[in-house]
Amino acid sequence: GQNIDQPTEMTATEGAIVQINCTYQTSGFNGLFWYQQHAGEAPTFLSYNVLDGLEEKGRFSSFLSRSKGYSYLLLKELQMKDSASYLCAPYNAGNMLTFGGGTRLMVKP
Amino acid sequence: EAQVTQNPRYLITVTGKKLTVTCSQNMNHEYMSWYRQDPGLGLRQIYYSMNVEVTDKGDVPEGYKVSRKEKRNFPLILESPSPNQTSLYFCASSPNNEKLFFGSGTQLSVL
Image (cartoon, rainbow over all chains, first blue to last red; front, side, top):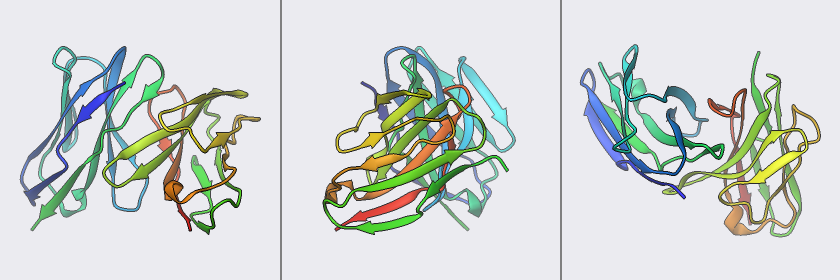
């Protein structure tokens, strides 16, 4: 099985930087996804990390440490539209993608 | 337009009345999957399919059936729905078992 831990809720201010952490325990780890999900909508792909390190994609960056079972999603220059849930999802060798409960981010003016 | 199409978007039914939620993708993806999403529990995988005529159980398969007779379609069947299957359901497909493309979701209520 897989254990995935991420904060339930976070609040940040427009224009600020926020880091959403995710720790996981899984067998046969292949990589880790981050998805964004606005209320009532389908999840949309943000990033996929296979190797250790930081991958930057515009205002969003994702970091992975395979040895520590740890990842984070970094959101810069926060905008109101970034208010959403962010789902951490480890992917294992058994072709299983398992989602964490998600972190609900609220961006305030 | 490349997309995953689920129908219906909303469904209210009664206990025991068989129903099918359809899912179709036009991207020629081999991998397809069904998830349910419940408050506090996140997305949980019900069934997945690696290719035509190949299906496997996910984390919560009880009470559900699927079929994959052709690559583009992956219907979810509830033979005898119960109230604990009230949930938001998502179908997804992928070209390489990795990045998922999700449908718009089906909100199911079983009374």
